[in-house]
Image (cartoon, rainbow, N blue to C red):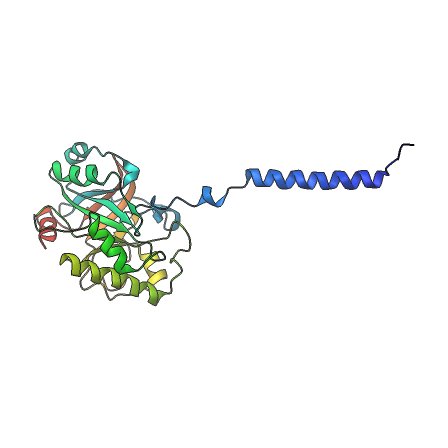
Length: 272
């Protein structure tokens, strides 16, 4: 004899089925953490500037006492260095390393290519203070392209310390712990190369994550990131900037910079 199920049971079953379908749909359409968090090693100088500080114009013209430069990473691939040189670019920095787990596969073409057309070049390290100590990362940097030699064509290495693209803005560190990490990196780099590293950062990040610490200004040149018509307020301690990353949408490679001085002063920085 057939069993007749009630309408109430049928409605309940449909309700459960609908809920399951809705949940499945949400799983299919919601972005996963893998989609929203970039892969380790993919960070580059200025990666967080637009998202956190935005853009408010570009400098009108380059002053005679400023020297145009660029910074590149694996993101740019093989760079047209002769095109940049012919446009007036005289110096370049190439990403060499990140943390203690990544080296730039395009480093040789980029670093040597800039040198080959006559530019003064240097290397930078993207810091990840939550993965290993400052000393370990400085040693890794020097061992993988971040060294220095007094040949008149090699700039001191750069510590790129900015927003964490993989997690918490300040890498889970207090201001005092961050200052300690940076100090560890800088001291180790100086011991290995004899040079004081350049610090690349943005005023807003530096204020938030170091408490606007001013103790590095006496030795370490400042490379400030700000996509605007002026550099604006600098981090504590520094009365002037040495380099300024002023745009991420310049010709040929995107990131363009200005050295705060004429070419002879850039050469002086290279010579130490």
